[in-house]
Amino acid sequence: MPFGYFQIVRIAALIGFSVLAYQAYENKQIELTIVFVGLALLFQPFIKVALGRQLWNIVDIIVGLFLIVLLFTSKQRK
Image (tube, rainbow, N blue to C red; front, side, top):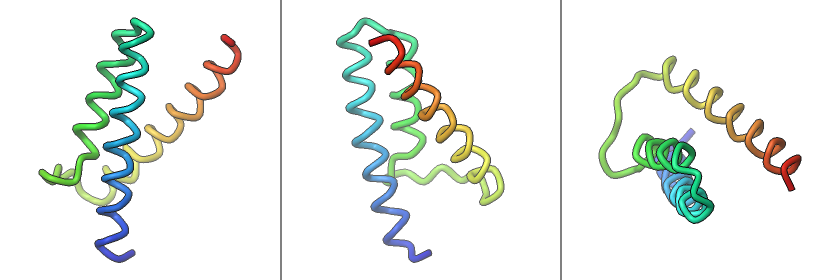
């Protein structure tokens, strides 16, 4: 994939996780706020976090699964 693609994905992740952190904070879910702030900092495009391709793949899968589980559990609560 081209470098620009990863930059766009990182910017989108930073914005998305920041919005989720704000919403969690508004709902007084401090643990989720901390998790989303941490993910926003991990995926931010300005200072590169060098984890290596293999470790980044694992992180991406874990974060993706976490978001899917969070989506389904939040729908069940409503």
